[in-house]
Length: 320
Image (tube, rainbow, N blue to C red; front, side, top):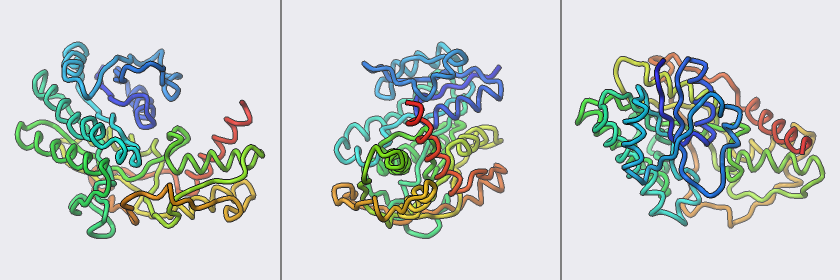
């Protein structure tokens, strides 16, 4: 039975990846930061089948200890301070966790067992002020937030360890991937949750920032399969993962509200306080390499993703 360590196990991606690995016969060791409140909502249904241990990308000793104890064959680094707006108010923390934390984990692997296969969760936010459209593995980075800058560091240190120490270190440059398990602070979940509240008469409006910002949105459940596939290859590499389609925040609103028979124009209010200090306007992937080499394809369409999220929040609210 292969063993996989997953940092950030309590997040959206961590929960979907854990489900996938369990189906494939892995022993799954999830790593979560110590906190005063338990945050296991997304993995509660898995707790009988996985092992959750305390660990922190800011603490080298905890990383060394867990690798020595559990002897994984694969490590998936999904942990990060991953909310872009927060990275402006907490830039040093974002850098320490999202950037330097990758180095700490790679160093732990190199010290304990450099044969461990490593996956780094890179991000389309690294492209920022895009140098070309669409964006591929060869597109230059121009990050527009402390989060994007930190992810660029994490990406390049992964490449550096691969080339310097002959480690199997792969990097997945994932474009926006959403699901009903997305955090409430992210715009897609914010929209879906607001639509459910408005439809049930529990709210009257939804305040958003830039409705014209465009993203390449896919389903998180599809994207974790790409992560796993990267670590099954003969050689480590970088891969862009996305749908190859772009949609505006406005279009997300339109589909979400119309799904319950409402017109978004009657409820959505643009509010300047939700604008980013430096906006990323157009992100769209060129996932040709992943499709050709990994044989990976997204299975959920944009419209299916939007309606899935709205239906999930409606069901949750009706139940409560």
